[in-house]
Image (tube, rainbow, N blue to C red; front, top):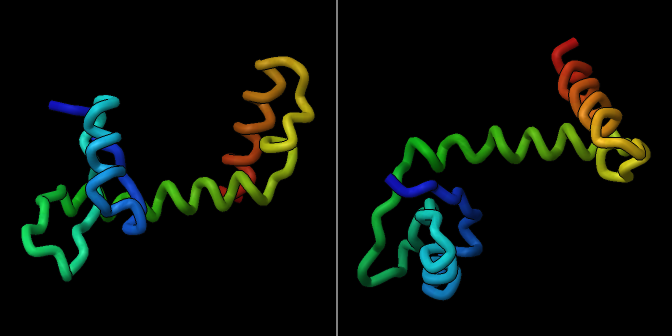
Amino acid sequence: MQIPLIMHGAYEGNEPRLLSRSLGPEPVVPPLRTRVEPQEYVTELYKRRNMIERLFGLIKRFGCVFARYAKTDLMFAVCFMITLIADVF
C-alpha cells in the first residue's frame, strides 16, 4: 500500500497528481464534478483532512512554535507539546 497524501481540492488537476505519484505518495483529493473521467479516492481518508487543518490552526495560535524561539530541539518539542496540551484544557 502506498502512503496517502491528503490534498486540498485546489490541487485536483493532473499535474499535482502526477507530481505526487512520481514522488511516491498516492494523492487523496476529490475530483471536480466537471471531470469527464473522475479519478477514485478514499473518502474516509479525505474526511480526516479537517483534523489536520484544525491542528495547524491550533499551532498557529501559539507563536513560539512557528517563530522557533526555542534554540534546541528539546525546547522546541516541549513548546510543541505545551501547545497541544493547552488546547485540551
